[in-house]
Length: 155
Image 1 (cartoon, one colour):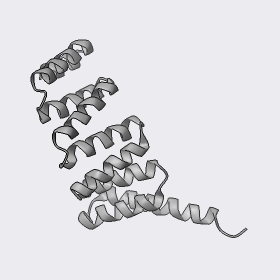
Image 2: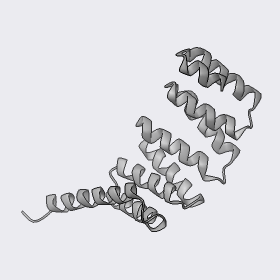
Image 3: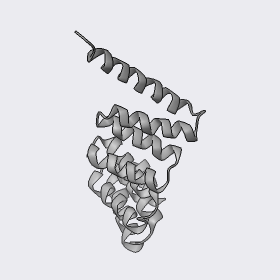
């Protein structure tokens, strides 16, 4: 909470120092690492954010949350698209929720894998057929696929 207050006051260095102290005191605290990673991301301290997400994965390697969070971090910061896709795939394998399938679709799309993105968004829609965002992404992927087919058509 103190780190957040410092962040809101624009005292970025003090916010980061507070987060560092929290992680020192709770090196095995999953919540501390996930919260710190999120805060580091807002502070644009991407190296620290990535490290905290990786530690969260180490703490709970059989749960999807850490993998999904790091994949989403890479997606948001436009870093490591290949690794983002691998992490999203791992999250979807561990916990095949609609959210994880959607994340997998987004990471595949970023890599230019439209067919893979379609497969993942279809899986998300199977689990959450009424989700408007998933439906919209599905339509957009259809348009991209149709456009690609027209571009590759006979000449």
